[in-house]
Image 1 (cartoon, rainbow, N blue to C red):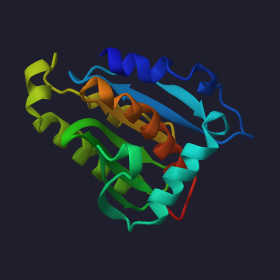
Image 2: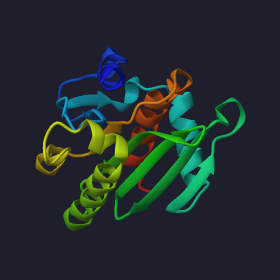
Image 3: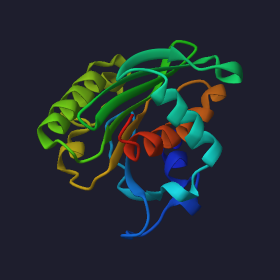
Image 4: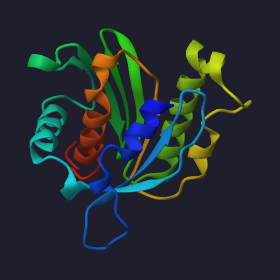
Length: 183
């Protein structure tokens, strides 16, 4: 749960109020037991251009479905990514251990988004760590009621201390995907 709280508070300058002139997206963090921590809005302009560029290049260099190990000093991080119709699933692993799972929704295809959210939630509920820690019968169910778009729903799965780059990387990947129609 501390990882999720950190995800929300890590970049307070990125949290903004709604504005028609800014590129923003909503982030909906969940803990491993399925608890929803609320909705925050992030300003893409407040993110690092360098990391947004890295993520845009990563997305444009692969097809809509890929698994890749990140280059250079990030070589211990693996990304599984699947996208279609303006929606995507992304899972970051560190040394082979899943650390974060995300659903990215642009708001372009409601039926596709519903199907993707169903896969996102069912996949998370099958994890042993979720089953062992869940506090209610339907963890992550709140994600189906979130209407705000674009949306980055993220489940912090925990992981080694060395994996602390992943929340930041996931936020930049969300910004890159949600505002780049070529991704």
